[in-house]
Length: 150
Image (tube, rainbow, N blue to C red):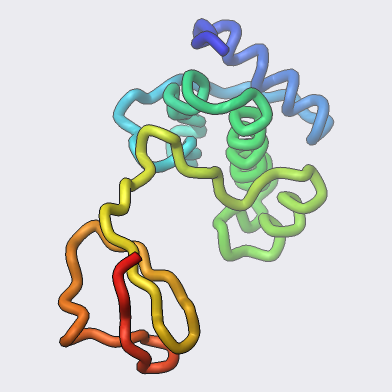
């Protein structure tokens, strides 16, 4: 999927808003290239939705639409004066009603590469680590068993 222009992005957000919320989106939406670990954000003080352009380029259309729907949940609840934050009941109910995701999946370019894998000898739990672990010093956090490198 290629990066849409600002006008195309606004039209897409407005279309999704009408489809899932039966309300027009009348404020601003744009791409913010400085976003790294989040798919998007809603700024209530400015009534602006910022979206991460990497999700358009690296993920599929459904993932990107899910991010837009999530931010529209924040937007419409804020406009209506209801609880628009992640912990609010109104927000959780609207997410469920519109089929919006609670969190977006990590970008393929942002996923960590684990160099070391350790497995507990007793319970079999696998630990993934970037840094090497001293297996004589550390044990399994679940059952206190010894670790082996796999």
